[in-house]
Length: 238
Image (cartoon, helix red, strand yellow):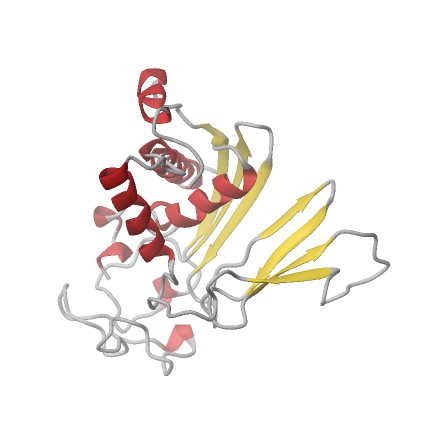
């Protein structure tokens, strides 16, 4: 629960949201240039039942380090961190380097836990249903509809959704390690570089400045061109 204390974290748009920002960059084909955020501490700041000291494991955590299904409703949770001053709701708007507009919402008292992405372009819309569990699909709408069609015009099962998954990360960890080892051992080109990670972190930091500074637009500093050029040598198709 150390992330509940601003002394230990930038904001959850960085510590938790950097993964999502990274995916938004990948889906959008660019990286954040201009960001604006708003936030609130809507629920957990009002919970009066706190731990007597920092570092204790709350009783609602399972041995695997996951929240218990019995932890409901959020306002009734007990023995929170002694200090809770980090936002439990954050909204972020971004203008990417290629002109794409993107938005991101992070809510920490939602009854379910999954990541939902919607991409709308001139050729249609795609949306994922599921978070990598068996049955996860991506649905496509690519023709005009007069109303809501929940099935879409086509659907695509998520790759490896029915395979063995690592709790919390699906097969992502295995794929990342495999690509890294193939690059080190065989010189295989990599699909992303540390510059991509840096862009996600930079957006998380700039968004925190915005949401805690009145919600104004904040420009995201770009990476040094020489650094970007160095890592670009290793990029290619995965």
